[in-house]
Structure formats: structure tokens, C-alpha cells
Image 1 (spheres, rainbow, N blue to C red):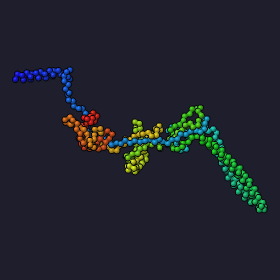
Image 2 (image 1 turned 30 degrees about the horizontal axis):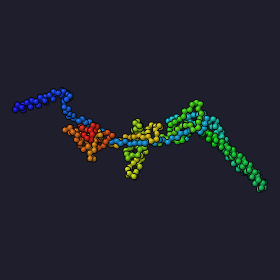
Image 3 (image 1 turned 60 degrees about the vertical axis):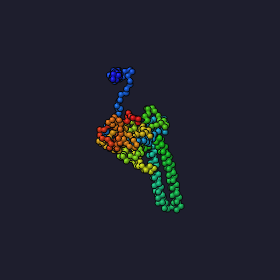
Image 4 (image 1 turned 90 degrees about the horizontal axis):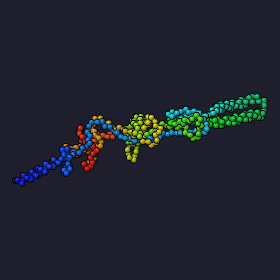
Length: 366
């Protein structure tokens, strides 16, 4: 009995020594056994709560550069006379854009055109004069023989034919001169090749002279500056409606134009082409530039939702993880509805206010 008491006292003394060696803050002094303390695992969570969820799709559009034409002068070493347009000017096909020094060619052309008109009238008058002369000869030659009358008529016709040939020669020379003047003037003037917008105009110095093949004016056809996309959601785009088109991180306002539906027989899927036109044209965009539109397919207000990243798949079932009363993870199957880029609708499986675990700080081994 005495021995038993001695052993008990020694055990108590040993335990007391160990407890006294430990610091009050729970750390261990040197030489004290390192006994791990249980720590509860901390998880990031999210509430299942009421929210507005928009079911959106990202539609990618590709830019097709507008048709444009750059105009040049063929004439060299001439002074610039006038520019009738500036960047941004809207023009129609055939509008005069600018011209070089025309010198006195417009006056020469005007004189030649006036002379041509006079010669044409003279030619018409000559034909009438011939008919009058023949009738006059028929009246005055009644006492002449038939041969004399025929000889007189032939002489009249010969004289008028000579005058007609001379007039035709003069007309031909005038027409060639007019064509030459018109060609010279045309080469010194630039006209709009089609309906569009002027996107560039050369600005010469006071003493600058023209150079061959130097860029002078660029005209762009705005109607062909389009972003297009082939998508199964083409019917969700409304005609002549504005959308935000994101290009390189910048939102631009764009309007739908002539959406067209195309049937794709290979995949038996209804694919349509949607075209967008920028409200403010950007002539610096390169062909093939991409832009995206966030298309809203459906919107629900006040539905239960959680972050999409809280969802997991187990054997083909959609589940979320929760923290059980025992502190361990458990999962529960849920039914989902529409989803946005970040959240998903919960139809069943969760109650409002329940917390779900986010997979930010647990792995497959946990």
C-alpha cells in the first residue's frame, strides 16, 4: 500500500513538472513535447440569396474594312488650285473634290464648244440652202432643156457637197480640240468615285507643285464598314437597335443592320449572320479587328442564386459543398436555372440564407 502511494506521488510530480514547463500563451518551452493543437479549417463561403440574374452570351464580331479609293493626279509640276472637301465631308459619286491650276483651258474649251455649236447650225442651214437652191433652179430653168437643167442641178449639188465637206472637216477638228481640252482639264480635277465620306485630304504648301502618283484624296464607302458575326443567336438581335460593341477594351455604340438568316445543312443548325455598323465610324480600324457584344437572352429578378464557381460535378450530378455540423465538408445536389457570367440560378436544393463553400482553398485531397 505504501509502495502504491509512492508511485502515485511520483506520477503527480512528473505531470506537475510538465505543466509548469509550458508557457501561459500555449507555446512550449525548449525540451517540452510538441503536442499539435487542433485548428478548425477556414473556408471561403457565399450566401444563397435573392438576386437579379441575366442569361448572357458573348458574341464575337469581325470587322470588314470599308471599300476605299485613293485618288492621284497624273499631271506634274502644276500649282494646286482648290480643294472643295475636307476630312469628314460626305460626297456623292461624280462630285468635284479638288483641282490643279487649269490655266486658260476652261476658256479655250468654252470657245471651242461655242464654235462647234455655230458650225452645227451652219451645217443644218447648208442642208436647207441646198433644197432651196434646187427648187429655185427648177423654177428659173423651165425654158432650158432637160440636159441643161440636170447639169445645173449637179453643179449646185457639187458646190454644196464641197461646202459640206469643209464644214465636216472643221467640225472634226473642233471635236478633237474639245476632247483634248476636256482630257487636260479632267486630268487636273479629281472626282468622287462613289458615294461615301472623305477620310484624307492632302494639304500642300504655298509653293508646292503636283507630283505624279502622290496621294491627294481618299474616299471611303461608309455603308460597307461592318462588323459581322455568324451565330445561332441571330434572332435575338433586334433590327436597327443599338448595342455596346467592345473593341480592345473600349465600348462603342453600334447598330444592327439587315440581319440575315442562313441555313447550314451540314450541322442542321439555324445559323444567322448579324451585321453591326458603328454609330461613329472609325476609319483607323484594320480589316479583321474583333469586337464582342454581351447579348442578354433572359433576365430574372429576385431568384435564388450563388456564384457559378461554387458548383461542382460528381458522377454527372451538379452539387455544391456545405460545412456540416461536425465541421467537415459535405455536398448536396442542386438544380440550376439560367446563369450569367458570374452567378447561377438555384431552382432547388438550397434555401435562402444557406452558405455554400467556394473552392478557393480546398483541393481534391481535402
